[in-house]
Length: 302
Image (cartoon, rainbow, N blue to C red):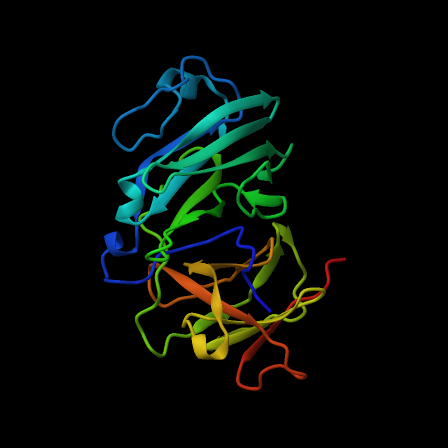
């Protein structure tokens, strides 16, 4: 069974060296679209660390609360940086909601990827509903994201090198730090996944925990009712049928199966390092589960 035959969310480039440039480089600037219509920001570029389309200081300070927005940040290898242009072909707004039509054009490879994303701020919460449509690429089902969270989309792949162009769609209010690099493989041969009081969300909807666990192991089996059992690892384990399926950073781990996105949040750091690391997975189809894997069980949402 292919875990990621349809890849709504893709991550990183092969680990070639320990510098961030080896894993990828940001394509252009971070581009921002506000859910509310703000005067005098169309096509505006502010220098330095500000975002494309960032609101002027007067507009930001006049708002009684931080302005909800979505940010688009493209990453790829240097080959993509030389030839790719990303942007918007249109924006429609209604109260608390914005729909953006996106494109990524590769002038060297003569490709043009498009998709539409709608972000809606859910009233009286710090949550956002993100819906994708009208796409030339595989996309995830609708997601519920917390303030500052993101979804990653595969925008293209170089047929010669296998390196990918990805776009991160981030939603929230206020300052949302840009990424420093893309995910990479861990260096340690004995790297273990640490799970301390894990909590699961499926497409953003929180699930119940069957039992609270604390464990650390090279391979962790995650039992998800209605979805099956999946083995997770920091290491590629190609000979065992593992495939790249997500990433882990600090206390959170994200992986996907088909068009569904699974997020596991823990009480402590999942990886010993401070970076963002690739997660590899495969379905565990054995009768009783893999005997050598530590087990995390989640309950059915009531």
